Length: 505
Image (cartoon, rainbow, N blue to C red; front, top):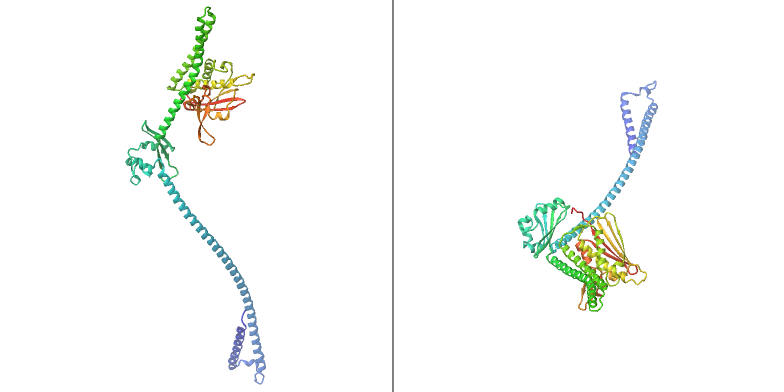
């Protein structure tokens, strides 16, 4: 919109222009058209004409002013729109800047938190690294780290003690140059790396030292290599050997007691028959038939004792020999035949009076074993079963032993079940433990009380109660497993698992 001051100035200029024009025209006599006949000028006409011109000029000016005002209004409107748009843009920009500031503040806060976490993580990593380094250095094993070139990257305190070489003098050097007496060879290191698996080596000098050496290939590391652990197990091996020797002596003593028990029964019968024969020979009237029966009975008892001795000799011979493949069903059948001879006069129930039910799977594979040792195991279980069957108080009780042999996956399973007096829960815990006779002749076995303190529990001595030797033969000699399940009222089942091996192994 044009200000009023500008309009008034324009009008004044138009009037001034008119006066100037009028004065100029007066000198030129341009009023000839307004003169009268007598030559006088009609100033009325001049005044009217000038007023008309002025009105026309003013009208044109007013029209122009109107158009200018309209244009000014339109420009003002556009300016208002531009201003509003600018305000919106400024507002939007301000909001964007505010959001950016908020995001920047959040980012700064998150960055500060991340920096704090990074610092905390760095601190933890340093503590972990220090902790791991402390563990590695204090390990009782000799620990050596090697890179792919065979250079030493780790050398703990135990390695310093054994080798006598400080860590700072060997790091970065070739292992075999820094420590020539190292028993691990570069070929073994290369084998562990090429096969990418752990390699275990046993290095020993009998009676002097024993070492377990383990080589671990490193995975997902920037510098690949291996870790070597050398464990001095000399004291442990010596202790284990002493325990094994003690167990062997205990087992041999147990076997000797069992064999003595089996031999003593027929010998007692033979002595009784010989005494009877000698007494009958002193009488006037000798009964040849009776004497013949007594001598025949003594002969049978002698054969029974000889069978026990032969089995003992075969067992002792097999202990030093290699295992041979045998038919487990035939071994079981032969054990039953031996039991019928050996256990025929056992106190209580005779083995011949027991019903034997055999269930053998078809086409059983041959078992790599010591057959006489397994026969000794089966004889011990039959003796145990025979004594348990003899304790049954039911007059109508039918003593029965069920024998089942089957193949399951890579093992032979043998189950021997009888329906005699079962084993209590307490006795099941110690049935396979070694027994030791004290100075009073009462057997004791090593056990553990409920508090975890080892105890020695009293046990009535009996050869039939000894099954630790059977456990030793199954677990140590044949790498198998033996277990027992029992119920006092129902009976007992012995479970034996014997691993199979192909003939090519």
